[in-house]
Image 1 (cartoon, rainbow, N blue to C red):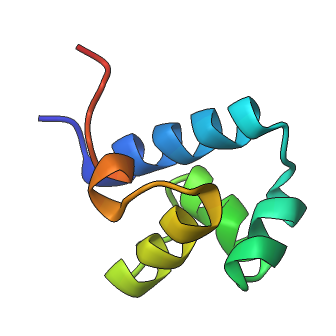
Image 2: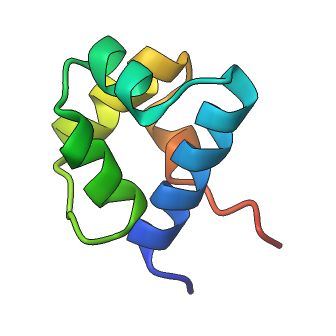
Length: 72
């Protein structure tokens, strides 16, 4: 199984791309620092479930959806 941080990073990047948002835009909407979003996307941060939930809410999806591997 792929590392959950890699799955999360890929799903956040994909959602941002579909929405046409920058990391700054997502960070502002999720009330998280932009550098933290960058760290999550680069897999150097290990976000809490609270952070994942904030990102999911900002994107308009669920926490489970952000953690679901769709690469297969």
